[in-house]
Image (cartoon, rainbow, N blue to C red; front, side, top):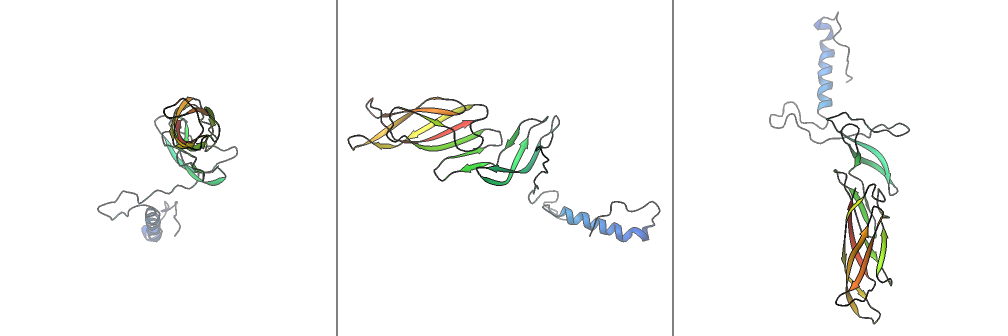
Length: 209
């Protein structure tokens, strides 16, 4: 049934508009029951079953909802990340503040990936094989979005594994982060109990914003 916004009219008598008013109440109830607990549920009335957000209508150039002081906006819009186009959830801070996509995540088959937290902090991770390279290697934040970190990298952690030495023996390898910035970080590898540097693989995890 269609909702009629212009009834009752000033000249209507109750008998004339009664059925239209009843239809309006029915239309309101039908709309309210979508994602909501019913009016007559004594235990949970006033609550939601879940929240559905259609993608925000963006004009060209793309615009996001505006926010005033002391308010925030939560909405969805269509974005393309890592070749995949889908709806993502966004948060805009008060007073037209930062726009944060906190459902975006890229998980590559090689173990690398990236995701964004609701706070706006960005997590990146990966696995790197130095191969035959000894000593220091530079790893670029080339996975995930945004790439690199938009402002700064706050921390990088690495954990090592084992590698084969020139003699064919298997060695435990230690890795140490030498330095990092928003776009890359440097790691030094060295073999346990000696100063001999040797290549190997390591896992890394970075936090930034």
